[in-house]
Length: 109
Image 1 (cartoon, rainbow, N blue to C red):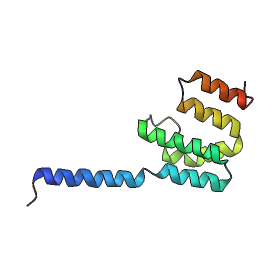
Image 2: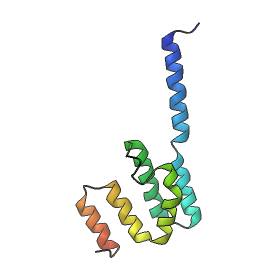
Image 3: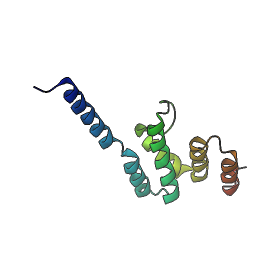
Image 4: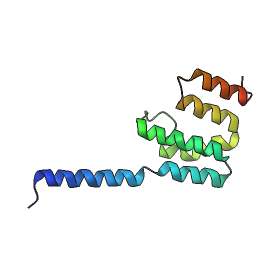
């Protein structure tokens, strides 16, 4: 008969293994984005957005959930510059210099 501590450890370990197995969806998204024709830098930025969403437990109404993947790819393909700026603004909301530099580089001022 296993102790309660042993069972709790096994349950936690199983839960963490399940979570780890599901936590790489952002890598899959990046590969799908590249296959769809998204540029490598933008695909990497979108992947970072999804990873950060999961890591920081952003609210469900923030873009970056696994279910947002198809919409994010559409955004990347429809308007690469606007999408890059959007991703930067969401990933680095307090870095005004980076946001402005990105806006200028993309001619979105």
